[in-house]
Length: 244
Image (cartoon, rainbow, N blue to C red; front, side, top):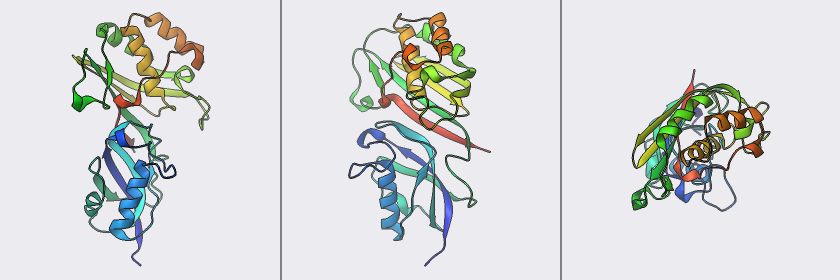
């Protein structure tokens, strides 16, 4: 049997048809689709481990995973995958490389479609908000969330597999090319549903129901109950995972 090597996979996917990343019984998942493709392409069973969990319905342009695979060209994998999953790059890496534990940061993107109607091609790939938003106010509140903070207020189940809720957001980008509003978040790590919770708080400012001082108070409360709800997974994209 051919020796298997550790490989780093960079993956793009549309998450609309999947119940998140992790295998979940008979339900379609991203991990399940990738592992099935590997088995069909190379006749080997291999666990595909991602850089982190994927919410049901969320997407990726640059998810990273690792798996033990045969050496040589891996382009054949895409021919065994559904059209909504593509491996963009597959490279052999050191045996101790781990897609999650070796990561030093991530960049997420969140897209909002702010118009009365949402184009069919955007359905399930944006958060459609029909009512007006004050996008200038939304942009002005973003710097409040940049830096090293305890983000317990913005973590769903803040103690879920997390030893600490302190994270450092190095940048929040805000761009309003109406009707499309795009937010980008770069950090050394994110808590469970943290990006979606931050987006909901920022949108609340755009709705005129919150402001800079209220967001500061929510951050300082370190209590999930102090924050508003959670933005839909449909607008969330994992753009990149960073390594040393």
